[in-house]
Length: 117
Length: 111
Image (cartoon, rainbow over all chains, first blue to last red; front, side, top):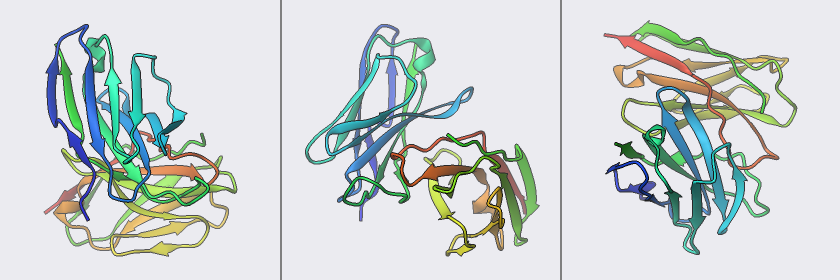
């Protein structure tokens, strides 16, 4: 079974631009979560989508947004990029039982390395 | 979210057992204890999880204290490939798919 894939793997943008990152979960996984990893703050939860609905959101400004499509693929968007948005953005998918509750493991992709100049 | 405390770093030798401790004194009854690790230049990967009883899988063992306020991840025979940052995370079965990562323990394996 193919793992979580993220595109692109590397991205360079300038301040003020916007960026869209893509994540394809493992087949059959309906939950997709996004995380930001920086040397200073470590791994921080951004948001989670399940069945095209955002279920949980971390403490990030509104410039960070996301969506999920009917095939469970997800995108996250960052508008008006700032230097501090330079980070590794990780996507994780999970098999969630009916009812939406699960303690199952999350499978992470390799991440997208975003550099903001 | 309940907090976990781990040592910043640990060092061990190849082919020896490694015991990685985690304190979680504010754990609630619905919190599962999860361990993930992040190898260099990779996304985190799941290692093991448990609720009350000790757990074993092909990667590691998880020993949970009787009062559940602490746990230990055991790598029975460390290899160089086990060098990574190990994260101990509490997840409520009632919660969403949100992992709250602390700083983790950076494990160094000496050949």
